[in-house]
Image (tube, rainbow, N blue to C red):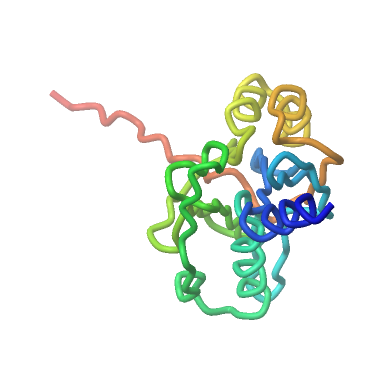
Length: 193
């Protein structure tokens, strides 16, 4: 019994709890509610938070301890997210896409403007357009959205195919967030002879 207790304590302190799949289709942000810690599944309420002060939503996948720090900073400050200093966890047992040394990925979707994606550090975000998915089930979710599925439906597909994605699906509508603005089409200029 003592040995089992020591193993459980080790797993709870060393093995990070990982949060999994998020999908954004330009109108809706959807996430699953499963986290994985070692070989155990843990359910959480949701993987996104809304900051009215920032006029934005933040969603995350990866190491839950790191994501909790990021979410707290996001909700309690209006300073740039890059000001938050994080230590990087490089755990070789983390499932993809976190094996590259990145222990988290976040997406910040402002009410106006383009969404920003960060992976492994809080500097040099990538500006992305919908549809977009990240986390362990990202490939399945992206394939579903490429076939016309909504973000919520994309998470359903990922849940069927990715063992790290599961549980109830949580969504948030982003009525003020729109797809990237349409590019102006230049009319050809006719040359007079």
